[in-house]
Length: 114
Length: 114
Image (tube, rainbow over the protein chains, first blue to last red):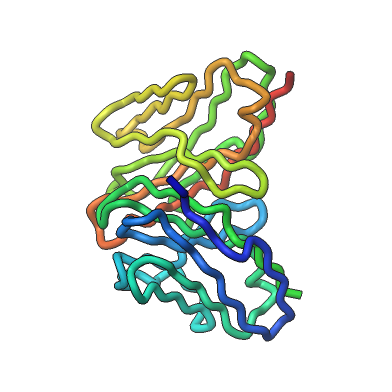
């Protein structure tokens, strides 16, 4: 009965470094979402996977952001050449069905770029 | 463009009182409206959700009221308790689309005083 897990929980990067954030969705969940939450704001959509297919990446803020879910389970969000404006909490959520509504969120990864 | 507007930004309620948070949306294609509760350092957790075919949904102390014509919905927390102190987010999505991404409001910080 494990929920969505994310690692690392905290990441400090120097500006210009590359980072990789991992999401383990609920087992068997078809849909996986990444959101970015700035301090004091609501989460904002980044990208969506249905199984291994990335069907929507309209929220990715720049081409420095890349996400993958190669086997339709674990997903990785990669940010290249991090900038200070990338500092935020990155949330992963999963949903049981392709057209399902209920999204279950992980605890997030807090990224701080110095 | 802020598609979901939430108010108030913060709210102080006495223990046992009623907490009311309001949201308004613009996109008439939205057909799923959840409320999430978020504690510091945690991911958002689904509280209750409603579809526009009903005007009210109640689960325990939490009630959603929905006004389709006004494009507004609200969360009522009855008998508010100090443990309810958290940030609350309304959200909206269009189920059945290619992406059931959630569009979040900006959040309401609720403090329930003992």
